[in-house]
Length: 328
Image (tube, rainbow, N blue to C red; front, top):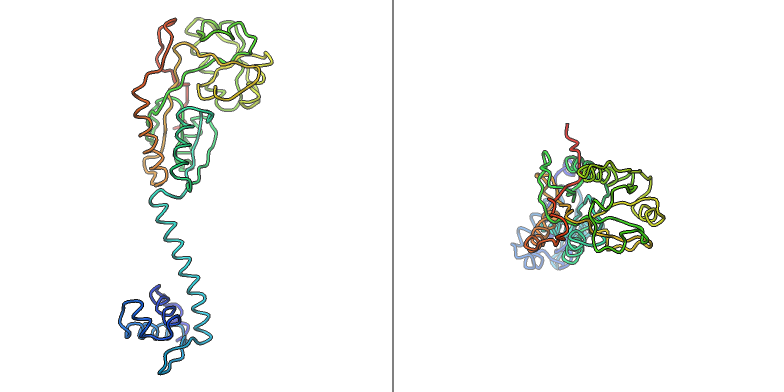
């Protein structure tokens, strides 16, 4: 009989009735505190005792007192209610997008620009949301989006990725990275034709492959096949190699806010790189929904302003880096 009883569920209201009776010392006062009938408290506690196979109270004309089993039940019951309360609060916060976490794939520098402003603004509004950032190239990020390993990726281009939703949020000018003693280091801006005959260096890791393809594409338009050398270093050391005279490279506008001794950044006339957010249409993460809404609200005023380009060269269209869709 007892073995069957313990398999029956103990409801939260049963725990509340027992704790109230223990706190007030009587079923009548517990019922008044809970705004229910005294008979309901008495009956539910009796049912619970039958289920548990042990009395929780000793009853007398003066009220009720906890038995040893009752004291243990109340101690555990208070902890259970506390955990339930915490769980409700956490779930409510996550459901409202006030808590939880977002995993973000990035392909642009966080030194400045739209993405930097977005993350800062979101953190100020939703400081309890945990943000995790993962570097990588767009193809890797899109594969992770499809596997639900990323909530969103901010990538170059305006590609319509299969099985994904995307939106263009901002654009950045493209800059040549030159050693400070370079012939064009003092120019306010340069053209791609100024870079013919130069040696370029790119990283073996992201976004090295994309920059390689971009340089080949742009300089091929001028009838030149560039000398591009891959280096097994990250961005910071790549900048140091430029300073040491090992070659030039290019980067997006956001990177130029960082300080790298011995190098200068010069905008390349007419070269603009669009950036988009990509996410899975079935993503139901409320925190991500808030991030996306904030990005859209921040992008609207930015969309009304135009990027200034020089009249030295006819403005080129926004040229995305060449990215291969990993879809079969």
